[in-house]
Length: 130
Image (cartoon, rainbow, N blue to C red; front, side, top):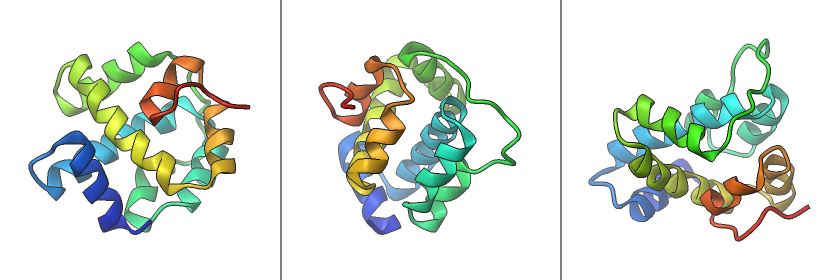
């Protein structure tokens, strides 16, 4: 999926006013996702995405994956964007549902295996599959 297609889909799902807003939300959500998964998994995920979406996922590889649930995930997104956790859940769902469509099924399963079951709905899935 090309970058402009990714943003168009996020814009549609999130009902954002423009591409800039969709790009900002996408970057913030991917940055919080990168905190939750291992640096190796983030790098593997980034490799399947268009160049502008890679930067929020990549770091120096010196950090550890943090363990937090969906509520904290949305709280961190809300803080980053300057919104409310309920709105951040909408934001996360728009980005992660698009992400689920943009990467291979194997990569998605590998990514979701690092997350508790509660995250599945943010990816537009009823449950996390093994």
